[in-house]
Length: 307
Image: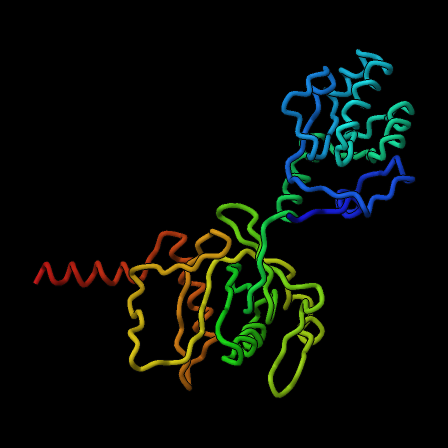
């Protein structure tokens, strides 16, 4: 199970920490969903998911004011007794000293955000979904080609990094070389990134390590990218049948998500960078409703039926 420290959460969400005496680095968030504890403030704790970040907005705050500080402090203390990760007051709402004293006693941080409650809740959920997503690391190269995330895989030494270098020369952007970390942020989306230690570096056999960001500028690199297409490089085998039409899509599965996959045989003289560009553009065309292979098939069928 993956976790996010409260220190990282506070830094990312740009919230004010009203309880600085509580050490945030050792406290963790384990769930991406958030909770607005309206029912808990009314003393209803059935099915209370205390693992979530607790967010108090204008509605909850107005109810607390009507109940009075003493009654509200009792409910806040009860919420904290469940060891929630933290409590966030949105809209820069003032926090009574009674609540802060309870927070210090229970070791539960209280934050204040300037953002509207709905916007803050949505951003927290979006960010935590990415940070807490299931993930794997694979051997490959991830490049942004015309806005499509193309994951290039193949055996070690087959030329993946050289293809990436040529694609950078052609104006595309490198996300990761050698190791790609893949996160499943939804049932339809995989996000790829590089490990921090190797970000923006490329290994070229015979030359060594080069820094793509330094050599080609910041426009040549990218930190994250959705994985839309996989290209598998493999040695040419004259006895193997390769798809020459592309009528039927082939897929590869990562973390339960299927991604369109093309197997590209390697032979001397083939410009792999151009092939990868063409594959990315063709993939985009298919998403926009045009399938070149299907169009050719329809033309041939129509011609045969008319002859």
